[in-house]
Image (cartoon, rainbow over all chains, first blue to last red; front, side, top):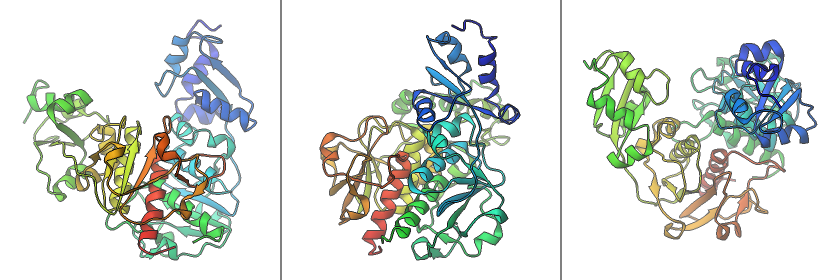
Length: 225
Length: 225
């Protein structure tokens, strides 16, 4: 039973709240029973797992939680990146909010067969908030990294500025759905042939837009609609 | 220029971080230029607006920000509730995350003509996180409140446990799309005739599921797909 805040495992978890340390160590932390169970289901061996009251004094585990939600268990894992691929995947450009990146990883796990591919200036998918938002999909479907020019298959850009409606696009696989963050948007070369989700003058949250795009594409590839 | 943290307007903003005070005063705060501009566009008169450097010392405004993002402007408004209605609206049951409630208000503004109707145990749509997530849609389309039995029109429940696919549902207006929070779900009487978004064994974030449901319903009501 760990009874000192100077314990090395606790120190490691504290460090993993920062991106710099996550990159340096190649590790990340997953907080909560659901996420640790999802890792196990997906066949990931943890570097270590700490359970409150079994391995560590509950107050000490609380003190290193990055989510401040009184986690009863925290697992530490090695980062893994997938290769781009699949009939349907998503590429993100400058999506800076970790909750949005995590939510898109979760949606792609449910709706697509390929990974979420992170382009420049995206939030770290291994940050505590992103990992939490994936609800375990991070383990089943690790993200990939690629520049626009390295994407496999045809790209279909979703943009609030486009004229053509999403449902008028063609959805031949392999297809990479491309979305930009709400601040910076997509590279100009993608805007040219982009399609939009018809929402009047309003805009949608980027995780919502990505998920609607995946839903439409998955349905059309399956021959519906 | 306000130079004291004991100023009454600053005290009011500080109080509005708590739900108890928001209900007592019938007010809420909106942080950031985008939201204050959205309120103005929608014709809302603020109780007051404070701008850093014009009305108040920047450090003092920072200190009362509930979002901790260094807001340059904070507006305070009277809470407004809409009546349920429209050809397409959403009813939420026990959706406890304010970011999800706000994101659904934003999606409904873009995709539906009716309001988001809050059932029991939902997050307060006037909390700082919810208001921020609406990106101004709260002003254009204030939320409504109603119990299940008070809903206008036909209900269509979206549930991860349902067998029928969303696209096989009928979408005759007026339609109220019903979703439950990820913890508690929907009341049992709604589960019986629910439909699901087909995502294998996975589940979707509740704001994503609501938005996909609205997208499908809006398209089908418009005669597409």
